[in-house]
Length: 366
Ligand code: GDP
Image (cartoon, rainbow, N blue to C red; front, top):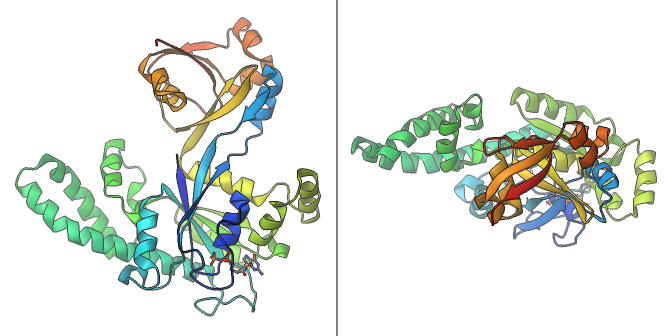
């Protein structure tokens, strides 16, 4: 499955958010640093209104959403790249996730200690980014000499890697994350770069954790974060972890009322989960029948056989074709049979690139 790692300085609200996300008490929130020592992983359903509409048309008994994972990663402090705090553990855990959800403290509360003694989310973001860049720099410096020798010795893999490593090193030495290298990069190069598994090459989503009263409009801190994110080509969402942890415990109708009272249209967690999904460059396709309507996750750009493989490896191996109905057609025409009659059910082959919302039916050899 795909994983987002929740990171941030101690006491910014990571555990509160994670607990709300997973509705478990697995990661205990508490007012002291290093509370969450072991990385905790939680799977969450990806909210998607489309499932309900498809299920109504297909008369499905059940709706099964697709899921992504969030990992609550132990608090990082200044100096982590030099092993301070839980530094090494923290960095090792980040290596294992596909994307980074970076929680920033945008709430004032004199009772909750800030490790740096002041509320400044942009500076906090830089503190963490600096530690990640230092860790990348060190790991690259260690590896580049070795790779250079192998490249001179006509090692093909090393010859491909070396220019990537050198370009990454150059950026890091200028104090910039490797992420900046990715934009517009050719797919093959991207693949090679990914094998380096650098921390600052992972996509980042900033989460501004605000006080209850700021959840609808944000505040001066969240505006500063939004500007920073925009300058990096990253995304930022405003969430009140405190509200989310309350909403997560309420029955749906009460949660609705509570959100209304706060001036919110939907739980912030829904926005966060969807943003995480976008960050991971994932799309959803559906299967629909009387038994169930089910959502499935694939990487954007996946072809039909790969998509079939998410259901079962046999589907990929024996793939023949995929009956494909675009979501809009499915809903507007009223399901599979009318879509077929209207000529809107396409037979797609091995080279078809699956589109977000496609309702698929696979034909395969067993
Ligand atoms: P972590 O160290 O980043 O995991 O932070 P926690 O989730 O453990 O939160 C640290 C403390 O801040 C706890 O006492 C939380 O109840 C409190 N906290 C978290 N979010 C908010 C918030 O939005 N507003 C206020 N006032 N307190 C919060």
